Image (cartoon, rainbow, N blue to C red; front, side):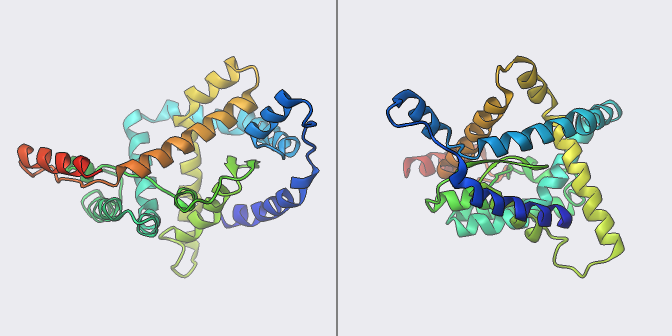
Length: 269
């Protein structure tokens, strides 16, 4: 993971240098100019090079590995892997929710991490959800968006895929904020970090297999479709965060009490 982080920094620097190289259509061609502005993809030539690189890597490496992984695992196993990876992200998300001024989401994240790390055996299981503390998500890019930082030009990053100038900050932040980053390096820890990172990539690719296959099979321009899907997904995540910082009544509260707490909460919004 450290190697990947170091390799992506020159790419981001190059993106900044190349931003002025894309030539927009003349303003006299109003329809083309508006489409160019809406795409917000001034680095499209470079992005498409990286898209073709990732697509080749996916076709000959990631997809076959993911299909083999699907064959030897069950949906339940893949869900437990996702739960474990989600639990690893919880400390960082706790800080992001606090920085965003979302105390209830921060509290939910803290309870989930404590419960799932212990009763849930390191996050392999999700007993916190059974107790009423369901998963809430954020990251550094969404936190910055909450402070009004614009998404910036679209980026398609080698290895990492769709992103943007703002959301690219998630890459180094997620690496530094991982619970296994602060301890002194060791062979065992390095093996765990690389193994978990690799497993996360394969598990995520397996979960997205249907969507990716459908886009590649049906879209006239898969690159543009993936760009649109990414932006829609990020917009939906931000919208969810903005409206969701609500009280989490534990499951053991009486139903009438939980209903009243929810009603009072939404009545204040």
